[in-house]
Length: 222
Image: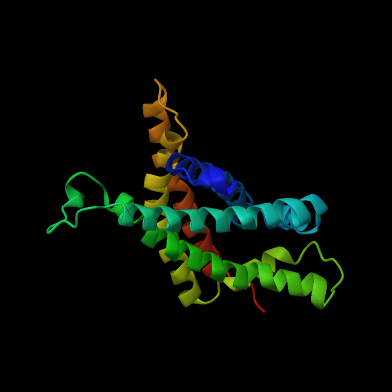
């Protein structure tokens, strides 16, 4: 595996495939979260299924965690190698003339998103593990909606979520479409696919922002 990833092209393909995997997960995560503002009962049912299903908990969840770590580690590796590969140090860099801010700052937006994922794990995953495996509470399929709403009570936490998802827009704007280029997708459908990736890059993060703000202003009494 390490021999394959020693190739520059292989590293870019691996980075692209892990990114596409995370994009798919993001859409699935958004679909479940959206039900919290549409039908709390559906949100409870889906959350309970995801939280108790053995395949999700012990197979898909570890794969997701490995995918996240792999994607961000590979991103850092590619960034470091790209910088080291520059034989000439330019006196004046004018990258903005032929590239977007998003493409030039993928590592910055990526690191902020990684920090946000740490906060997200602290807010949701760790309490869930403690609830089920440390405190060993009995199953309660109706608890998920109220617990999620209360997580967005603090305006500071909501602000952090909004900031992270704004940066996710920039990260996806460049990264999603570039992933298809890295795996060699270049045909008559490329223009339409690029439009789709740009719409996705804006709509999904804005959807998460809407959910956070909606839940903040629709708190359940303690």
